[in-house]
Amino acid sequence: DAGITQSPRHKVTETGTPVTLRCHQTENHRYMYWYRQDPGHGLRLIHYSYGVKDTDKGEVSDGYSVSRSKTEDFLLTLESATSSQTSVYFCAISDPEVPIYFGEGSWLTVV
Amino acid sequence: GNSVTQMEGPVTLSEEAFLTINCTYTATGYPSLFWYVQYPGEGLQLLLKATKADDKGSNKGFEATYRKETTSFHLEKGSVQVSDSAVYFCARTHTGGFKTIFGAGTRLFVKA
Image (cartoon, rainbow over all chains, first blue to last red; front, side, top):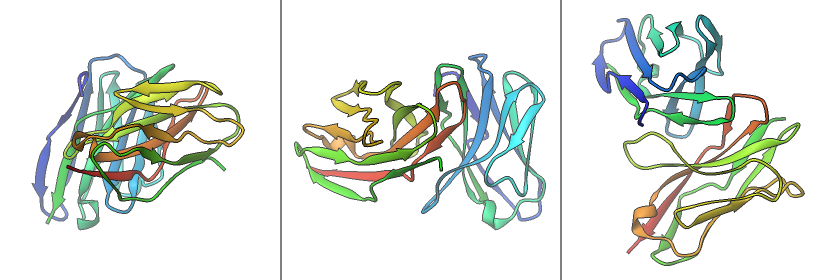
């Protein structure tokens, strides 16, 4: 969506390789999030950030790490990708009094 | 607890039919309530919102009223179109809080 850019949009990688997904925002919003979406599980929060260098775990954080060194960028890293991490990943942003809104998604396939 | 429950799908309707997708929530305090829509291959988009009891959110012919007494926020549309086929998510957050809790989503199919 306007103001949020995810990259890459599509990626195929091999089991055991590291993968980094990038979320970039131009809205200067304080909060950033990474979700994954899988059939039968809806949206699940992986990690979130409430400021530069301030991050916390969501409900499905195992196997993932994040970093936020600048307001506009929130990186999601899979240190050693597994097939169970094949999913669609959505970045989202919000601000006080501003509802959460989402990027276009990154489709990751781990083979 | 803090959760959002919405009706299971898929919901299949003919064009011009009336749509209701039920959503109930549990929360401490007074959350803001939202409906999001997701079209195939895209991210979720905010459809409408309501921030206090008895507020009615509306957009693109869709409406939902914040019912505190029944802790509900049901989505309605009087006449659906094929282009409304999508997945609809009900969501809530706390006033003053920043995390958003989503329901599981309801898939809507509209047939011509």
